[in-house]
Image (cartoon, rainbow, N blue to C red; front, side):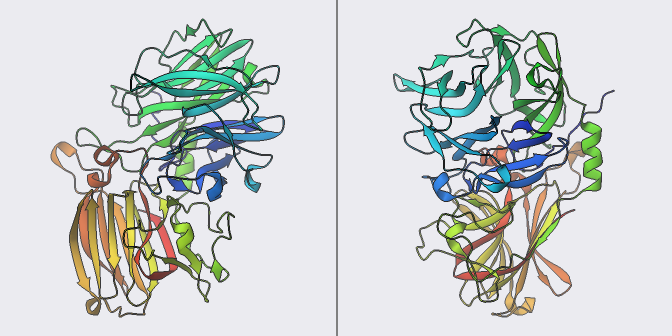
Length: 524
């Protein structure tokens, strides 16, 4: 029986993957929604081992987020392509009015990206770029128009100049899919005189799938892949569900005329009980694809053993001291000088961060009590993990080590100088799970405090089922952990909260200023 791989190549909240290959290296981008820096960029020599080399939208001016930290706004479904020595990344920035597609470019993704150009009159999401044999660039996207007050989605394509964003013609309608809901995520490819169109259909939930069609002209007629959908796990017991939003990359020297390809796609790893819950977001998975005659066939187990071997030999553990030169963490509109793993909802932490005279990273809450609180966080990348932060908190300040899914759903250990409190927030409700006074913690004001959170499997439940995890919140006293409270992990799952992101964990400033001495993330 073939190996059924349940291991992502990018675990954690890395949805909507797009990929290209240049000189033997593979380059991958993902949606980041309301988080800044935006659109993470990864590089790999072999499709299995990946290293982040920055973000395509690292400066605030490159990606204004009108919704602030509004959940699941911001960047939707980027595409990365390479043409004539230049990398291009195109993305939709939701929340902008008017809605349009934004393109940045570079000759070296690790060295930074240009200012964006916008493509006018392209309202919609999920943009794609493809060049024909004459060198004309075609932008395709899921367009949105309004007829009698109702949003109508149509897959479209228009020729553009990708360096200026100027449209070079009028849009044409593409194949609209097999008839399932939410035909989106279009990717066009040129192969042996044909246009091939890859789509996501069925919605980004458990009905998700990948379909394909081809045509001699963009205006059609379109011929469906006889095996549609070419990838789906719906109505199966496969450990990876919601498989869709795929992108192809050629592996042979013949490029798009070759026979061997790889395909990246998103998926979720749900756990029981019914109806299934996932907590770390939509992740990036890898399968093979061989072009047999007129059409590609997906080979799901091609990379399963290599990914399993990688995971057996590697870990996502890290310890960040986060020290540097005193002063601001980012000057003006420059990228901030933090490791690439650090992000912030709405980019709100950017203005809140500095380094004190000792070089420690500080985070300061805004003076306006009605303003959202800044959070500096990393993605949760494992099914079981522990994180700990050592903080020096100024008198009167309140700071949290926070597990966060969206502005209204989080769990945290909060320190206010007098006590440590475990709290859980769901929409308008906040509950105290437990607390301990400072005198019991041997941590008076002015001294460093160590807060911790772990996600761990609960006891086995009915018929062997269990909730996804339990979030355990506490404070470290000397060499021992003091547990303050526990929370059923389903309260911070996508199935309960909604949205398109996954959990992150980090430091949230509630009031005043706190200095971060050390931040530790450790898979369990």
